Length: 239
Image (spheres, rainbow, N blue to C red):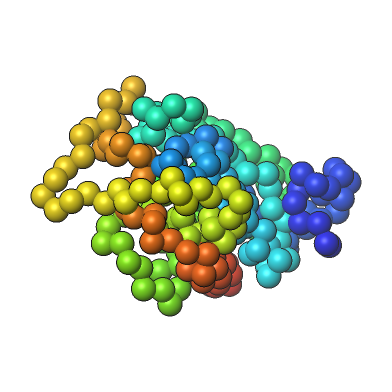
């Protein structure tokens, strides 16, 4: 089947494709979350879909539409960044996952790009696990050995790693001239972000990034992308 995106098929094609043997990948990545001054706010959504599609080619899988809204309280101080409550996101993901199962999916991969929703994703997988085989893959835990010598000393968001990935996936959307070194100097703490969410543990960065995106390159991104896809294929194969 050349087309692997569920939203690009007609309903009868989806019905035919949703056999118990075929894997369905649910990519989870924010549509609206700040990613520094140099990356678009839909960076996570673009990453989730690109990696999911590449993995789907190797796994003969279907890819569901990106779940673009989640529990992202650490970013709500930055204009345009959107967050659901933890409970709302968990309910949303559960209903969408169970909906696919109701239509015949029996093998699912929840591919998540957000740290703050990891527990919710695990909870949903456990909830639906008696109805289908569900594998969870968190981006943060993948691509640890891509053969790259990272130059930044610390990072985590819109940094060398994430910016390199975007330079490989969507270079036209990356504005490297706006990238700034956002590594926290030794013995210096960032100021806490004032968030409406009481359990948010967040720190403020003037640019919104943490790490040094100026060290990013498309070649690093291509290697990281390949490592991410390899890890997902391996994870599914071991399930």
